[in-house]
Image 1 (cartoon, rainbow, N blue to C red):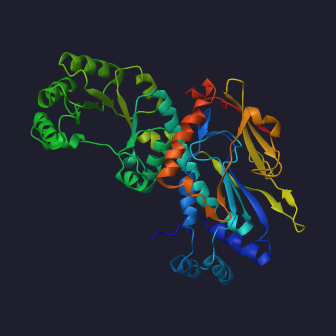
Image 2 (image 1 turned 90 degrees about the horizontal axis):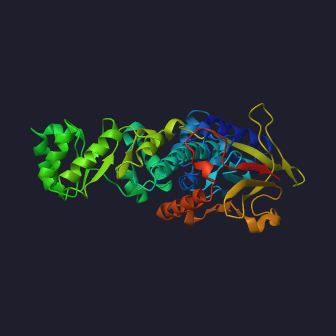
Image 3 (image 1 turned 45 degrees about the vertical axis):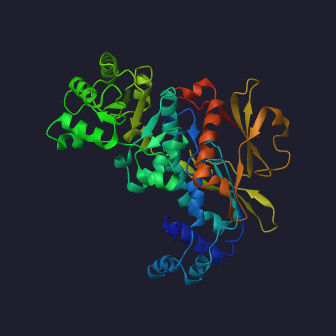
Length: 440
């Protein structure tokens, strides 16, 4: 039995529906758009994540008796609107940047076409999922590039809320991480899980040797031993004495890592443990990962930094009405004009333009007939690709975008979309977006 997502929203979403129903405007066909005005942290690109979770949440967006009774008891909306909510089902269409895709300022990441009431009620749900998941995926993508092909594991569950931890593991995996420490993420999304022991396991025993012996007895010599509870050099020597030269890996969670990992590699090699891997943790972010990428580190475990978006815990996305039908059934573009918060009205389609070498050079946003519009961008067909995909058709969620299959597609898509970016996109310094957004 699924838990309803209908109250994962703001009070004013429902009062807007209430007022629109009374005014007779609730059923006007409308287009809402979710986008970011700028890239948080002055990153060079963003990564779309959370789309599959959003689609699943929309499927569970139902007002059952429990939800309706809460609204009634607290006089949130009128009894007529309670009746409307009791029958709520999203019946419109949703287009969007598919999960794993990169994006830029102004990119229409989610486009919702439905009645005003059906679309506006999804605002907070969409933003809460997409803002967080995309922030994590963007940070994770930068770390993956910085690691230069070496695997990273997400292990930040204890640094965020219990549900965010699962979402973060999913987003990091889409962006290229290889595993997570979070078991619920493994159960829910099929993400590989990993983990062996913490310092408390060593401290439990009368000596480090006894702790290592207990772990080897339980898991065999291919396990990973944590060697920095006391003295790292002695920890490495003891680990090899207990496990033999076939020891799988040692983990280092403290110290001046660039120096320590070189010393540990030399020590392992001198002891004959030439195939024993070194994994490091200890408050890593994309900058420290980049600094260690050329060192004899074999893998990284990243915690706090990835689950908080490495300093940018939200992408600053907004959800705005950009078009509606008038009383004659004609589409009217609408836009917010507030200083620093302006939006671009109109139904849109998107193509990413490439140069002759296949490198992305601009994001072309066409104002006109909307996603899939006839002939929009036709002059760029040979040098560009269409970005938006139809995620929900007449209320039916397209199943290839959800579940484990959706995550696998998103991982592949992310690799491909990052590969087509210009090299400046990989810079870890603050700067302008890697490619420009152009409206046509």
